[in-house]
Image (cartoon, rainbow, N blue to C red; front, top):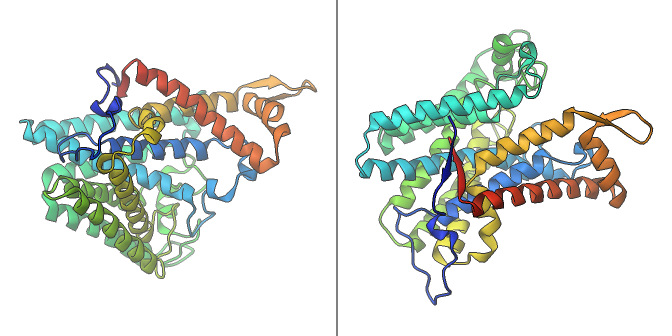
Length: 393
């Protein structure tokens, strides 16, 4: 079950007095940069998931139609990367404190099952039409990736984890290009003709996001697990002995190398979020490393913290924000009220057309709605933070 913690705020919640040289955090301490990076990511996810008018939204706030990427396509892999990083730092601390690997494995299984169940609940809300219930989803993918990556982390050392990540990316590449799809052939990467879609449609027909495929489907979860493992590698790096400058340089340099490698891989296996291609995995992991490196330098090394408070507030309750904002979005998008003509329209449509559409162009009005929605949840999460309520699964 989810638990609501009413505990003291994180040590970094009270902003330190200005000092000439901020203290460098030890690898074992909780990192403000991790909470803020998570907060930036979940704020971005809330923003892009809730446009006023999706068709009118600016292109950076929409997913790429198929191949290629936009800033929106970075949000989900960043979240999985952060899950691997958080897991590494947390489990390393607990193992050092005497926890057994068996106990941590049980926690991974339990937590994954709860997250998966919450994802199914969110997909079914509010009417729970089981005959059409979408089985995959964002939380479901997080659950499966966390489960498998967590067991890999607890059951192997760094070398085994590297082998697992490379093996997952290579296996997915080989499967997608060598296994023929009936009616299409080998190596077809169109929405309907690729192997991942064929498997999803065969096993979960009628329970997918699209008619015959799902962006969070079964086979494409393999490289997504590697995304979590890239976060694990970042955690190992942050825990390694060395100076803060070395950590920052390593994160940013490693990220640049992966970005370049992903672009090279794109020549043969296109960067594609819907398929979660191996090139997409490597490319987005590289950008996540660069983003983490910049956050680590600004917050935990240079001590530039004032700007980060809203993102810290989001970051310490990220899953709660995702679920609660999703429930409200589905509620106002499902239930109806009468418009000026007496016709029934969704509550969201009525609010948007009445309050936001008259203010600006369609693209700007859509953005204003999304920003207002993020601001609403910042207010809610700030109340949670002030009351020291941190919802954990």
